[in-house]
Length: 424
Image (cartoon, rainbow, N blue to C red; front, side):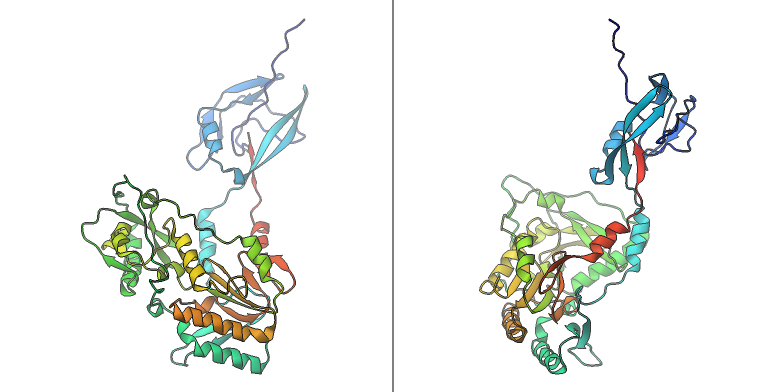
């Protein structure tokens, strides 16, 4: 009995080899087997040149060379969609695995984001009207539903003006959450010593912008200068959607030494479902929520970070700390404890006031505003929408009778560029 010959499935280099002079593989076509040096554009790191081939049923295909498998494995699974194509040859047909790979241009995506400007108000189906709680010389805008009658609009406006002090149009207007409610502790694990990150370099044109942002943080009292720190982290400049620079801190070294705070976060599906069935809704957002909670005095210098103009540490709880979200949620639980799931839903810094009957909404808002004033918690007025019938909450559009998927998420998927093909 003749020994069965092992047949290997042809393996083409990763990404696309079309047009490079090597063997071409297309559905429903024959295969050009000219032995010729070819280059596969494997990634942004390097190209791979080789002339190695392997035979399969009398045909020759390029072999993978050292490094291709490793590079292919670096492509995230979310960028790959596995399919199969059939190769028709004179000797028969072969079934070859194919990966469709989505490649994007980060610079292009970034430029698109910079063109976008931040707009006020929540994403709602209702038309919003901007109202001024201040004067012409010093405007203090926020957003109100345009649908209520003139009388109801006047009632809403009077209430918002009465509680104008719960809003913060600038960092200077945030006194900070009452320390009796919450203070952030790091709780470093025993046996872990101080960590000092090596200094990073920045492009010269970024340094003046970084210094401007650092000066803003100093001016509002969020950070202070520190000498002889034992813990030092680095900053990471990040462009926001509106093109402005935001100075973040890389706390990964510090976070690795802290135990996880397992304070339970609300279940989003239950909260979204509980928000429907209400005639009136008001959506609010905590103004730089984390920064309204103070750091424990003994832990301030552990948040030290390097900047081009010196070393500073946080006096308030910064974004990026491991347990910052748990601390904030615990604080909100204390502030709204007696009204949660009755006429208030809260997920970290997202706040919704809901009323079964529209005529009760002003009364419910007043109770919530009293708690905000009592505990010195400030709301971002540019991200508020009062007296509406629908709005965006935790990635969904909630209405009186239904829940919808946020259309912006659907559009983002539909506008994705067509995937490129990766033959493996």
